[in-house]
Image 1 (tube, rainbow over the protein chains, first blue to last red):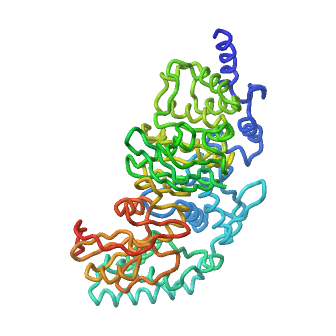
Image 2: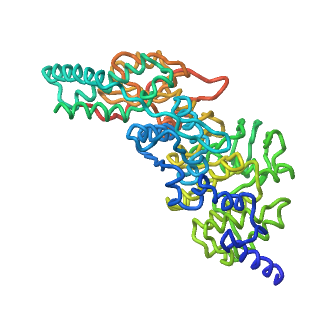
Image 3: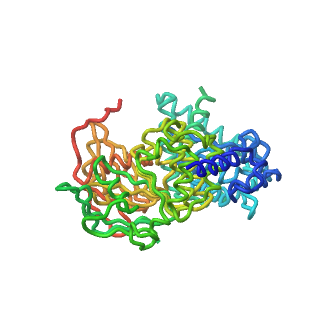
Length: 215
Length: 310
């Protein structure tokens, strides 16, 4: 018993000391590799949250109440970052393991999100390095946007004359948009980068944004 | 390969059947959520799979056909029971030492590194650790055995939200690092939705729903529309569960993967795993399984009026 305790106590000191000091004797491949790789800028993200910033400009968060599937939330956050210019081509997305460790989600979910981004042509995987932003989200050309806005305002005026209030307009728009999405089915993702099959939240936001602009 | 496979499995304690006629196959490479009402036999099934008890009838094999409870099976499986059992009066270091000596394979370095990351002192008695730390210690001991299959029975039942998050983060990191398959039972459906990619719903000892979570969610919709049309609508669709008030009806339907048309005047919404589970739990006769599917629309359930719109 005494001997056991002696060994255990020695072991405990080794284990409890900082990773750099334990001389590799007790360190496993898992633990040992992390601090060693930490010298490279890409992997420095592992030990602390604070160090994650420079490695990847994205820090995912999840909204459990949104009803949007987890992988889609990750995809949308990247798209959002692209649209607002936080993300640029060449930026690295967080490593799968880091996302898994910080959000406690299934690694397959993260992989699925990254695959989706790759399918959309927004990101690309570099073997052994990670996933990197490849493209920006191209906005619809400005003249086209003005025209669309103009015709939408015309429609809104018609709806207003017909007696629809703002909530009614949003409900109708959302429903029509959903129907439209249903007709179009699964669009080729590469070309339809800005459209999402399940992104009803975003559509609602877009719809309410437009109506507010009018009201 | 299937990590757990049961055929006609049953377990009787005295005159009571804890599990009966259970036939299922759980594929590897997944984080599997095992869900079912209280007393349906989830714990019994897991105990049989890890070899803690022997079946009364039927067989259960693990890790691709290895008989549950055999030495080869035990080496590949780690199990954390409901109450995360530890020797309360042993120090953390002694628990590691003991586990190392009781198993043919145990990675002391990994276990110590994990506990170090978690800030769990090796000198403290296991019984003096917080609930979350005890769960993490039990999990570390399990993962230190470097299993191919990790079985967790209600692992987070007694943990606070932060401890739950940290616990699942540890499990998910092990999945990412080592590709370990995980089977976990839990009542907290919202929690499972984030982690599980395969779903098994046990009901009356048999499998009522099984499949990949994404497939299940993609093949079920909630249709909302006028209650007056609900019956005619239900005739043409595979309705799992229906709720209706005087004006509005909600039908949870299975769409069999194809893009079936939404009836005019009806709205189609995606379902959450929780909604799906509740619907099936309320309709023990309905089933959704890969392969031969027991289909057939169910009669509408009246009563339980939902809110009447406008």
